[in-house]
Image (cartoon, rainbow, N blue to C red; front, top):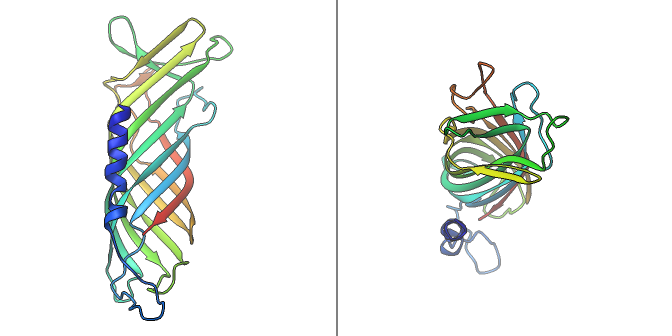
Length: 235
């Protein structure tokens, strides 16, 4: 798995070394009137579980990282409005008190852990996803300006190629990587906005982590995520 992640990282970052474009206005240098912006992105987030089942609480620090390559395609003459499509990777970690596992017969179980009755050290699940983002972009940039305001919003389709649920307590530990009720397709709406290097990002997963077969006391688990963080862009 680690080798696969290293290869994926190299694949996504490689366009940085392949793209050569200049918009500098030093003496003797021509301004590129067909400039593009923000091709490589890197984001970090803090993750919050939304629509949690009754009694489920978020525990400890939970966060994520996402990065990838976007093709910037201006759609107006000033080139300050654009659409962008690309390919990315995202890792997310969620610590909580919802036990996700399997019983002795191989059936999935979903149980709310009461920390007053059950003493445990860790309970969380993590996801590794391939993402296809699509953005509508507005910015105040020009070929000569490197510091500018930006508002980028859009949606992305993700596929979870690896899921892991981990539970650990004194003398007992288990992990599950195959939960039939887990929905591997992720639909996410997002908004990135800011000035120059530092930009805020807000993400909201539209669909639940689990399908309707995942229930607690007959009630479906319609749990989603809200992610808040920083986004960095590189030409």
